[in-house]
Picture 1 (cartoon, one colour):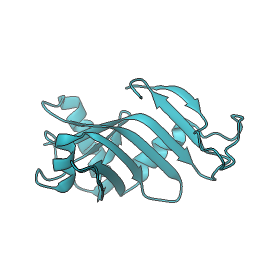
Picture 2 (cartoon, helix red, strand yellow):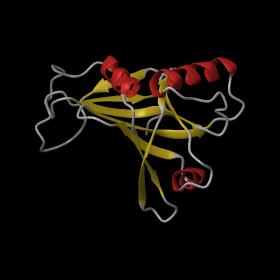
Picture 3 (cartoon, helix red, strand yellow):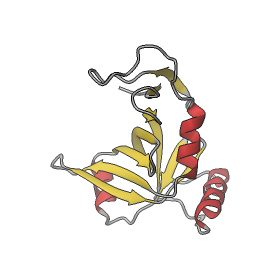
Picture 4 (tube, rainbow, N blue to C red):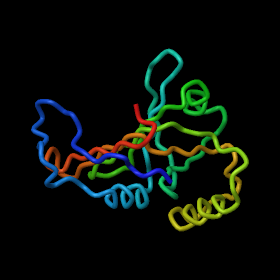
Length: 160
């Protein structure tokens, strides 16, 4: 589990984002939003550079977002060429997570059980066959509940 290496304000010139840290959100806010949301929007990029956005179900387990999709879907075809994604859970409290979707191969049995249990708890259904699904670990996360006063950014190791 990679922890954020930096929490700061996002750079959004001209939008009144405060310079001070007063009012910034805690990481717990992100964890809660990523855990309880039912639907998430995942943005991928086509080979010609055009964006593609689609809703998915998924679970937040051990600082990563897990989701699956059929091998012939546009998002999976996009991910096979460019694994960079942006995603966010539904709702008015904004959380935008940028990361790289990693295809799950030979998953650890303990992880399988955690993902399965999270899916059963959230959706009432799930599968222990998560091979071929995706894990997205955050590189950069943005969140706010009242823009611009609570606008917060977290940067993780490996972010560019």
